[in-house]
Length: 219
View 1: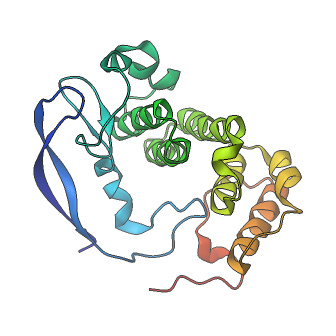
View 2 (view 1 turned 30 degrees about the vertical axis):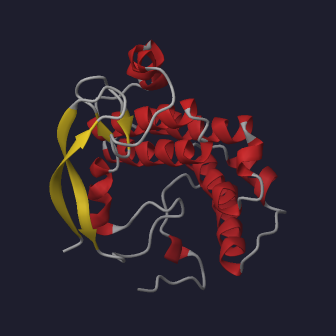
């Protein structure tokens, strides 16, 4: 069994109301090679809907509702928050993940915001909403462009950026920014080389990491 779900009650750190939410109690360590952007493989992909929860009272979205929020409650009533920054979708998982990204941005936690936008893009991929998935990925890229200090010396995030750009069809930018970069490990170097190869081939598809020559998934 790849994961076990249990129901738990949480108290919202913003409004103090209590509500019940399903959470992942247990999960397998390995279910196959992830994609180049670290999207989990196989049945573990279905756990994304448990990665964020929303308070039914005030609208606060975060990984868990008891996580503190330093901003004002009025933030959750803004048009930008309610509309996920203008990214249109009816997919509940993607909506919660994008709102979680906006919460992280409000907290100046840009690294987790990038991860949340990327996870939302995975949900949008599954929903068949290619346009919104591209918007979510490019929102993550824009965060990295606008806040470079938060990602300084973060090769793992730079490789995520390469994949997000390639998945959005920004092939020339991938080649321009990544073909001559060096990385602290052979695996990262192999991933970067493969991303540039795919971009040079105008390949916009998702690829598992074990497609890279010489790379295998190990349990």
